[in-house]
Length: 252
Image (cartoon, rainbow, N blue to C red):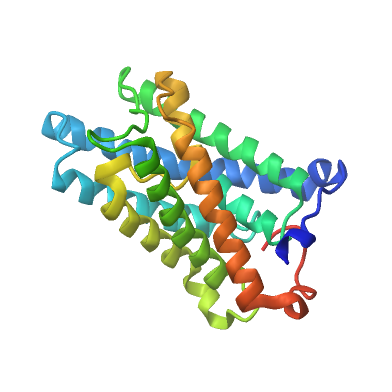
């Protein structure tokens, strides 16, 4: 079982030069992703007098996040694995592909990248704030939790199939665009209900800058549960113990 492969690691996992470079890569990738994705929403609001909740606004958000994530994963892939998401890092940890201590280093870098991106957007737009993720009218926290679990499951399953699976072959070439596509598609499916985060760090930055924490726990618990389910299923059924022995334990 993947749970038996979990490794806590040693302090060296967070102090070695390659670990610090990986954390910096995650910080930069997250900054790029959040600045472009959230910034596109702010620009759409400015051009349409707060029309981001319209169908056109949803499509714009989907495209912006899909494009930005494609780039953010691509530029970090050879350094940190291009996680750009604490839930993806958690899924890799559950599968034994990264240690707990190194995961924590990634989570800190990812959250800081999101906060800095939102602060830069606030400064660059003359004081406008990135809106915190929130539930739409008629959507309960449990509805949103299911949305986040299912959407993040699809995302992390895609990451496993295209980036982590040692049998992926040439499919690994399209991993960044496949990951961007599933996020864009999930935003079209869930954006109108809970904002379709799938990424705790993406939710964290706007929440910090706007200091709005309503139902914020949903955007952490849902993605982490979805990531864990995807990791366990893919590891147990499609990778297996014999194949896993050939994998590195730091990142993919």
